[in-house]
Length: 218
Image 1: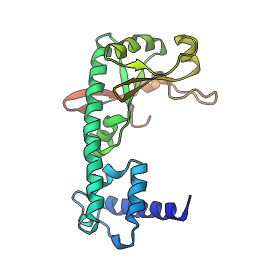
Image 2: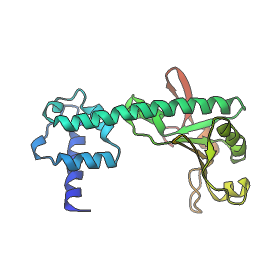
Image 3: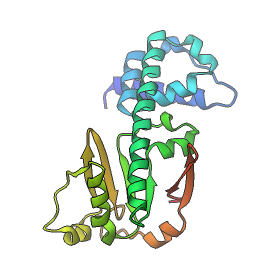
């Protein structure tokens, strides 16, 4: 990590501390290398989140207009993509539920709603789904295919062998990736009690629709 990277990281930490402070907090915007800070925030997909915290923050008046405009654009882009991802998520859920199957939604816009109260605040690139049983993967794959998705992951000989040695398959449609999980990882030293995870799963409501999600603990 270069000295420039370290300084940008320190500036980002100071800015985050200020916007998170209950009393509003203060900092000297003149001492910030905004160009590198913006680059770092983009790299870690924090730009939209920062703008959401600065929208009604007194520090906003002291920040360079170009920085605010850039971060506002990032939030708008996140809103558009996350809304599209939620529409696709609902489509997939409807298709899977019609087959009598269930899914848990991991991360995504629903996590943005849980953590920040606004689904667009969290930058999201894909749809992550967890099936209850590995044996259900072929049936869910047919639902994905019916919704226009095609598998991009290669099978290890066949489905059963793939499910034994890996933990997910990836599918694509028009730039939208879906990761279908039946576990979280395949490591000899790790064990996930999926039955307990399912029994502890919660419910997240978004736009009057209910979704199964991981518990806060998991």
